[in-house]
Structures are given as C-alpha cells and as structure tokens.
Image 1 (cartoon, rainbow, N blue to C red):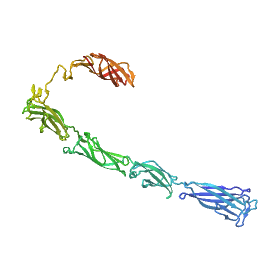
Image 2: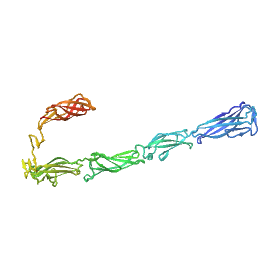
Image 3: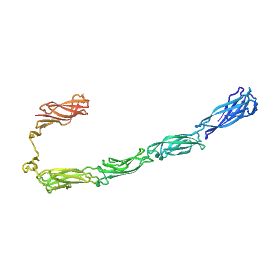
Image 4: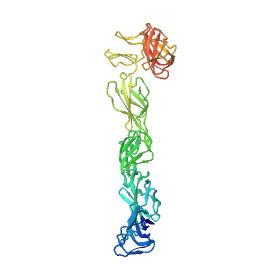
Length: 579
C-alpha cells in the first residue's frame, strides 16, 4: 500500500510531505513501512550550510543533521526510513507516521524555523486463522466439516479430541467442505451414554507456517446398531419326576437357562430377562418358576446394557404339554355273584371305572385300584382295576359297605371316589335283640331305617313340631305361579321375566322411583303378603320393594337410575296363608 501525508503550509508556502509504502508479512503478522520525507521551498531562495543546525526526523527515527542550499521553488528530498509495525491478533493494524524539519534559521521572514507532518494510517488487514464449522456426527458414518479460509493459499490440519482420545482428521486441506467418518471405536469413550461431545481444531498454515487455530465442538451419537451382543442362549427342562425327563409340562417343569452376552464398544451388560411359557427369570443364568402356560412357547431373552440399549433373541418354538388331574367318566359298584352277574344278594362287588389322563406326549398313564370296608369299619387292601373287575367274596347280605376307588396317574395326580353298597333288599327286618327295624333292607342299628320310597298323606310331626310339609294344590294362570301347602302356607313366585308399565317416576335419593300394582292369581286370608322382588327401570339398574296392599294385590316399587316407568321384573317371591 502507498500513500502521502502533507503537513501544514507556512505563510510563505513552505510545507513537508511524507510519502509512505507498506508491505505485509503474512506469516509474521506485521507490515514493513517505508517513509520518504520531502520539504517544499515556497520562496525560491534559502540556505543554511552551518553544520549541526539543519535537521530532519522521519517517524521518530532520530535527528538527521545536514546542510542545504535551495535556489528555486519546489520539492526537495530529505531522506528515508524503513521500520516494521506489528498487527493485532485478528490481522488488523494501524501506524502513526510523523516527519519533522528544522532550518536552523530563527530570524528569517522567508524561511520557517521548523515544519512538521503527521497522520495515522490504517494498515491492510493480514489474513489470519480460517473459520471452522460442523454439525453433529454418527460414529462410524460420514459427516461434513466446513473450512472458511481467508486466503486460497492457506492449508489446514484438522484434529479431534473425544473423551480421552485424539487424532487427525485431515492434513493439507484447502478451504471448503471436508468429509469425515469418526471412528466407531470412539463409542468406547461413552460407555454409559448414547451421545458425547468432542472438539475439532483447525490449524491454518501460510507457506508452511502456522498462523492461527480455530475450534468448534461437536456431538457424536452411538449408532442404533450398537446394541448388546447375545452369543449364546440355551434352555432345558428341569423336572423332579424322571418320567418327564427331557420334556416341558405345564404345572411341573421349571426352565433352566443360560445366556452369554456382552456390551459393545465399552458398554457393559446391566441386566437380562428371560421369558418362557408364562414365567420369567432374571440374570445371565438360573431357573424359572413352574410353567403356567401350555402349547407352542417361544423362549425369549432380552439383554440390557449401560447405554440403555437392548437386544432380544428368540429360540424356536418349544412344545409345552398341558396337564390336568385324572378324570373319571364312569363309575359303578354293585353286589354280584362270583362270575360278575349282578345280584342283590351277591357277596362280591363288580366295580367298573372309566378313567383318563393328560397324555403328556405319551408319558402319562392311569392306574385304578379299589378297596372296601363294612360301614363303620376299616378298609382292607387294594385290588387293581382295569376297566371292570370282580372283588370281594366275603360280603354278607345283612351288612352295608363302602367302596373306595382311587385313580392315580404317572405324574402323581389322583382322584378318589366312594360308593355306598346297601344290604340285600327285604321287605321288613327286625334287628337281633328287638331294638331296630328296617323297611326295604336289613336292620343295622337301633333305629327305624327305610330304604323304600315313602309317601305321606298328612304332615309329619315329631312331638308337636311339623317337620314335613307338602303341596296340596298349585297353578300358573299367567307369569305368576302359586301353590298351597298342607300346613296352610300360600307361596307365589315369578314364573318368567316380565315388563310392566309403572307409575310416573319421581326423583328420590339421587335416582327415580316407580311402582306397579300386581293382582295375585290367588287370594290370601288377609293382607299379610310378604316377600322380595328384583327388577330395574328401563335398561338401567334398580332396587325392588314389595308391599302387600289387599288380600289379592301387592305393590312392587323400583328405585333405579333411569327416569323411566318401564319396569322389568326379574324376580318375585311372596308368601301368605290360605287357611
């Protein structure tokens, strides 16, 4: 850069001029400044040849003494000075330039004693460090970095720091966009997070000399693909019964499992859950509770890591057999002869049982056994039963017996049934000793026993208390049925659900109440009808109350939640007396 500064002119036109030239040193961030000082003679005749009197100073470089003789009007060169000026860190700078001249003549009206010139010059800005910018990155995937250089001649080296690791992105780069794929291994610097913050630093070079740096921070994300690695997952049935070795059975089998897994790129495994047939387990190995579901079950494991990431692995479907206790579809025990022919006076028992069990893949079967005892006595030994069998031979016709049959399966499930075996049938039998009598069977106790159907044409009393009552008349003319009993009780009930139209509903207790008068199909001796009912208003819900009105009417009131007079009567039971 070149320029000129002029000083103030004297009354006779004398003046100083300072010509300057600047040259920038980019690498040193400074400028070299050269100043040339001139004086203008405005009168055309001046001289001072006395040594040590005239002098000039350029930009504070010190006095330079000289002698002169000017014979014409015009500019006269005095001297030059070169010096350097440092710029600011951002490359900007300025310099103050000065010039001074002294003629050494103090009593002349033509020649001034001294002149000066000064001015501040703004220096050309020297380009400094390039600007750096970037967005976020996904580790292991390409992203973009942008360098904005002040000069196309600049070259750049970009480095990174992330966690405790650093490295070089690029060297010798020009300005513009740079593609960078941050290493996937940097995931190890954030073992407990899915994102971390790092720093990019750009060093700018001019002709091989570093002239400045610029930095920017960036966020790097662990890619979704970085999840726990499950390298092993095995399951096996754990059964306490040897018959179930190698199979899974609902209600019996526990599941033993083992998991091999690891966190990726610095992460650690923090948890593991296994699910199988309605049960689960936690940890890398162990045994679940007993299976609660049957069918095709898929063993599943989920592993959690310190970043909160999960990984799931499923095995092929495993068959879990269902199980239920043994069932009996048919059971009978009757007196018979030795060859199994049914006989009321037989001293043997023909026992028939149809039983089944859960197959459990062909590993389960049922076994049936039976034993008997005299009523009130102790059981004898068991006899195996396969479908049907004849047991006993020592039964007597005048004693009753109890037969007990037990069905047991291979897995330990069982079902026990009992059957009473009566004495042989006789019309009447008197107990030995005369203190017992039986009808239809042999007497076995000091009491009246009856083994035949009984019919009574009047009430049965013990002392003065009626212990048995029975209907003497009944009817069902419409939706209400009735019956009269021997004792005089009149019983009426709702034969089927019916919808009736009630009174206009009134608000009551936060709901609505409506009632209906019902004519009974038969009259009682007084207005003492009592009973209960159930129903609702409309399609809502309700509470019913029954009140006797006359000897042949009742009132049913419904308190419900709907403002409706449509009463749906779902139940009714009332009592009175007919005699």
